[in-house]
View 1 (cartoon, rainbow, N blue to C red):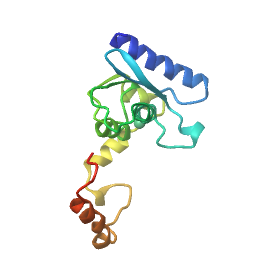
View 2: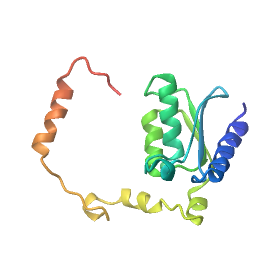
View 3: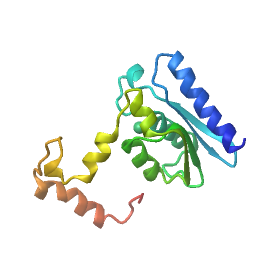
Length: 155
Ligand SMILES: [Zn+2]
């Protein structure tokens, strides 16, 4: 499939998902024009705030391939990813991202993630989400154990 055909598949999934009661978002993960996995937004259907189309597609691709590393693959998403999905795309090490709608289009229909992008620019103390450091001396023990572990699977 060409990149346009792969994007059309992501768009088709986004439209089908609206008909199925979900949000208007679809994603496809592919390599060399072959689809390995797809995902749609299932936040309300699954009662899962993280079930965005891109995260769903990444989970499906990783399960299908039996690896957490999706380098060599590309993602086609019907809309520019939110910060969570963008982070997931980086963590999955996908090679390239294509998107159809942009975040302004999403904002115009009530899916505004710009406040998260804004929050990321701020120091933790200045964010709307209150946070505080707690039990750092205890939490760091797991990091020390990880640093010393010789047979770990690095990622
Ligand atoms: Zn997202």
